[in-house]
Image (cartoon, rainbow, N blue to C red):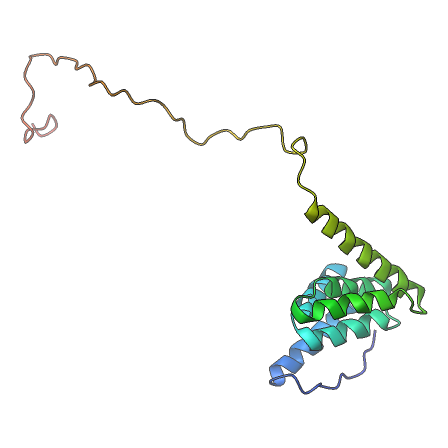
Length: 166
């Protein structure tokens, strides 16, 4: 998909930031859904600039994979933009494009399910039924002194004489 040039918003600090935003914007529209989702996740950390790019991708006439990636980025928004991102997804339910409506409905459903899963305590029966094998064996240590085995000859070698230095 051929994208028209994005006008900088003025919030970018330098030329590198503008180029990074442009690269991530192009990646959202790529054919690889994994790369598109990764780019949209990176945009979700960029607050207003990322929000604008994700909004543009969601409401554009792009394919459904790009819209899904944009919705993923909006779901992953953090901080002060999170509320605005979910308001944008709710607005998308009323959009004229059927793909946009479906993607927004799916994103809101996934968020609702993740919140419900976080509230419920884990089932004790859902836990794995196996116990991992310990890496080492713990044995008891006797407090009694060990029984000494007498050496042949009855004498111990002095500490400075070794058996191997003959």
